[in-house]
Length: 319
Image 1 (tube, rainbow, N blue to C red):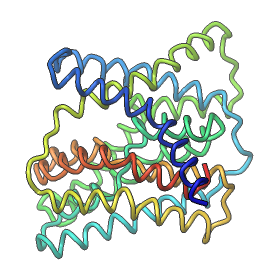
Image 2 (cartoon, rainbow, N blue to C red):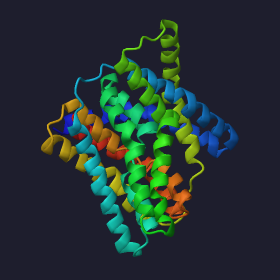
Image 3 (cartoon, helix red, strand yellow):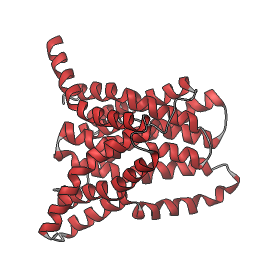
């Protein structure tokens, strides 16, 4: 048993090593000004405006979609996110007292995984291309559901609370205009409609798709240089623990013991839940000018510690 555990652990570490190494080298380059921040921003724009959308469009347009939507996948994943979000809000209420916006930001920090930059490459590396369909189903709803819920909570008791509907309409429009979610929607429409794609164009999309994952990892590593650990360590560790341990644990329980999920789909849901705090939470905190330092600290800590949570749950899942 100890030998088996050691072998499985080494396999997971070796699988994750290229991903961590690429991001770490990019962080070093940004840290030592080998690449400037404007250059990093240019790479981010290229990656998330073109390369990742091309990969997502290609993957969803050519995937073998199931005949029937497996709602158990969505329930097991998003019920866990809802529970952790509310749990994070409760902890924040006990720690800081009332304050609707602060509670919403902290709850989102506990429950919002970095599914695009890290989730995609890690799931594909550990589970293979067969994980693309369940991954698409979860990623396509991630921003819409979590950001909508966070916006409603943040606006609920503010004077401009009547603007909730306008915010949600803006989120819906942004879902279509955003290159990430827009490419997923376009790919699924092409797939469902059976629209043929010109062969050379398909080959071009496949070629661009190969560059998407390394480019995303480079932008993650270089982008982390902008964030600093600025106090709030105790609360940031709470957010990190909720995100890396509690959330995937709940998804694992729901996927394997409550809902009857296909094992590949269950593994995909748990691995996505293992990802660190998403950069979008920082954007959300800036939008409401609340808990920016706390969220930035949680992003850095969760990125560093996610290697251990991913390794633990990958071992638990028998990957």
